[in-house]
Amino acid sequence: MKAYASEMVKKDSVFRDIAEKQETLWLNNKYLPFDTVDALCQLVVSDRDIEEAEKRLERFAPYIMKCFPETRETNGIIESPLVQISAMQRQLEKDFNTEIPGQLLLKTDSHLAIAGSVKARGGIYEVLKHAEDLAYEAGLLTYSDNYEKLADKEYRDFFSKYTVQVGSTGNLGLSIGIMSAAIGFKVKVHMSADAKQWKKDLLRSKGVEVIEYDDDYSKAVAEGRRLSDEDPMSYFVDDEYSVALFLGYAVAAKRLQKQLEGMNIPVDGQHPLIVYIPCGVGGAPGGILYGLKRIFKDNVHVFFCEPVLFPSVLIGMSSDLYEKANVADFDIHGMSEADGLACASPSGFVTRIDRNLLSGDFTIQDEKLYTFMRMLIDTENVRIEPSSCAAFIGPVSLTADEKGLSYLAAHSIDNDKLNNAAQICWATGGKLVPEEVWKEYLNK
Ligand SMILES: *Cc1c(COP(=O)(O)O)cnc(C)c1O
View (cartoon, rainbow, N blue to C red):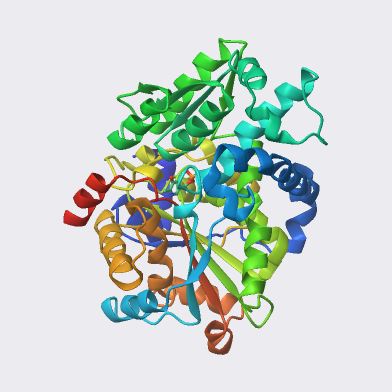
C-alpha cells in the first residue's frame, strides 16, 4: 500500500473499509454550499456553455431523426423516461430490512436511443460537435442550415478522411463508435481487459476497428491517446479530460427538471432531490451532477456509486490526488462484474470541478449488483445491466448508515422533508445487451 493510503486508513475507518473492499459510504469532506463555489465553477464550465450544448443538440435533431428513425418519437432529441418504481421500492425495503422514504424513481438512460446507455449523452454529443466543427471550418455548414444534409454522400465522403479514437471499457466505445460510423468517420476503439465480448462484437459489426488491451482502462486510454496524437487527421475523445463529453452529460439536468415538473414532483427547500449515479471514471455522473447543481443548487444531493474494487473517484477526491490516485495504491486489485465502472484512476477534470459539489460516494459488492438486477426485473419488468444496478445501494443504505443519517442531519433534512423527497436511481445502461448475455446474467 502507498504511504498516503496507509495514512488515510489509519486516520479514518472509511478508508479501512475501502482497503478491505467492504461496502462503505464516504461523505465529501469538502462539500460546500452551492453559492460559495458557483462563481469559480462558472469560470470553467458556465451556464452559457451548457446552453450552447443544448442548442447544438437541437441543431442536430433533424439529422439524428433521419439517421436513427427510433428517435422520431422524441423529434431527434435523445432522452429517456423518468419512471416511478414503487414496487421495487417496497421490495428493497423488505429484502434489505430498511426504510426508503419519499418516492423512488428510475431515470432510464439504460434505454437511451442509439447507444443504450448514459454514454449516448456525452459520447454522441462530442462526435456531433467534432463533425460540426470540421464541416463549419471547411465552409460546408452554417449553424442555420438544416443538418439533415449531413447524411448526404458529399458530407460522408468529407468526414471519411478523418478518424475518431477513444479508450473505453465498453459503453463509451459503443456510443462513439456507432455515432462516428453513422457520420462517416473512421473509428478506432481501444478496449480494456474488462470490456465484455458482446460489446466488441457489436462494434466490429458496425465497421469499427476494435483494439484490445490486456490491461486496465487507464492503459487503454493512454495508448489510444498516444496513437491518435501521432495522426493529424485523428481526433481523440478523452474520457479523462474532455469538456465536450462533460457538457453532453450536463444537458441531462434541464431535461430532468422538465420531467419532474411534468410529474408534479417539486424540488425546493421542503422537497429535497436525492440522486444516485453509478460511477466509473467520473465523466458521466460528474457532468450530470454538475448540471443538476446548477439548477437545483443546495436542494439536490448527489451520491456516486462505485464497485468496492474500483472506488477511483472516491479515492481521487478524498486524497486530493485527483487523477494521480489509483485503487492499486490501496492494494485493491481484481476484475469487477461492473465492467462499465471498472476504472482504476479517476478523471482529473471531474474530480476537481465536482470536488465541492458531490455529497458522497457509496461502494457496492459485485454480488449485490445481480440481486438488484433480478429484483428490478421481477418488480418492474425493467432490464438494466449490472453496472447500472450500483445505483440501488444508495437508497438502501442512506438511512441505514450512521454516516448517511449524519449527512441528512447536517443538511437539516428531517423526517418530514425526507418523506417529501424524490430519490432517483440513475440507470446507466442495458438496452443493447444481447439476449444470450441476459441469460448468462440471469443465471448468476
Ligand atoms: C460509463 C458508465 C458509467 C459511468 O460513467 P463514467 O463516465 O465512467 O463515470 C456508469 N454505468 C454504465 C453502464 C456505464 O457504461
